[in-house]
Image (cartoon, rainbow, N blue to C red; front, top):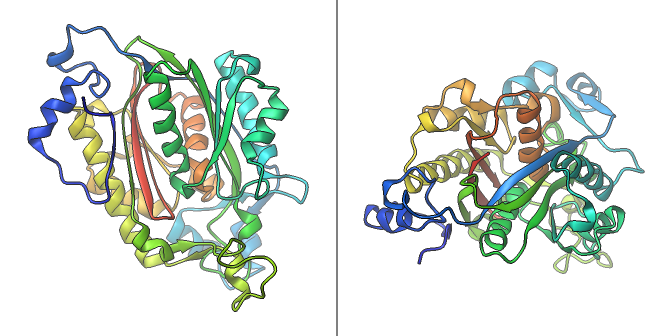
Length: 366
């Protein structure tokens, strides 16, 4: 049988394979006649969500006092107006813990009953142990198996696809997936092209195993390591260890090739969403909302136009948060839920693109 998570670098839609995929109960959205008489399989259902951001704000006008830029320049090119930034005492684990507490409360799940915790981040608490270990400790989730996932902006959707496998197989009953970042701690505040983009925050969802027909219907994940230089932060790791002088001191900060990222992001988002619709036998009319990684307002809008998605089906909150990498999809989803834009039974698509390069999407019936 086919697995409901597909992996490849450049996918070509194979119509001959569509029937096989749709016949598999894990990959159909439940509306296909081929499986209408079969019992619903276990699925990973979102039972609760939450988010947390630091109180401190950095506006475009604040940035104009730091580098050669203006509010109009930043807004027109990114859609960002303000971002939340951590102080010296606020760490990635702290943000993750607060978001997790809200998601657990929303799901009405006792942390003692948690079985799996994944923290998606590229700004971990420390080299080791994992940020997830600190989350587990704070929550007193002693039963949980925990680890970090490093897939940059795609980390959260990657995490959902991993949990999908464990819950569908029956291995676990529940899981907590968190996207948490303190990107402003690795931002070059002298580079006006990149420092305007990033903010800090965390978002989380609790997933539970159910056979009601709701849950993650399909996930697609992809990578292209040939393009690693498009987005990177090179120090400090084994290539550039802390005890060696850097040939370029700015290697400790994020580096971005803007044009390449812009082009690749639009292409890969469109590909991922198109694949999801094709495999699940859905049209845009079936989708209530696309919740994208909030990398840049222009990228999201361009991808939506190519997909022919109307504005009301595209959730964008980058103006208030900036780019929070792995945290952006769960923060956006939490906002979407709290604003009443989606409800139980709706079908949504999460989609993300980030360093690696990495990209992926999840189709979810709430």
